[in-house]
Image: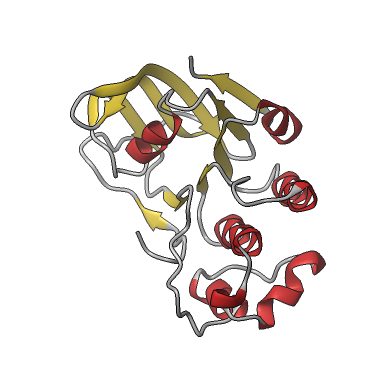
Length: 204
């Protein structure tokens, strides 16, 4: 996957209008790799919403997100997307090269993202290969939230975060609630989802 969470149009055989006010809708979706590991799942998400997907490890949360992003097979059901929907997808472990002589500002410029709030601004001058795992995670989340995407997919964004950084992540997400985008957030931390999401769906 690319380093930067570019907003990109998603095109596939199930592309269709998602319905009035919806960015994305799933109808009885089963997804997996050699066989289905999650589903059937039905959901919809509209602009301005933060929808949280909760479930224990192995419940298929990440697989479902990958199916939505067209990187895991869809075995049955339908995924319907708004026309020309632009999606930013951040994996559980965002890719970072060992030697990366680019700065945080370079990253945000490549993602066409706005400048971050003050707590992250000091990272703009730092090289990406010198950031901690938590700092890199926060910067990547901001790149997705503040870019051109209408739908942002975040897979376990609390990975690598200490309590203070997790609180900052919650602030970033809540600061973008109600904006002209939707967020689909996967986590095994129920308390975090209850704090930041407008709705939650349990996968069990």
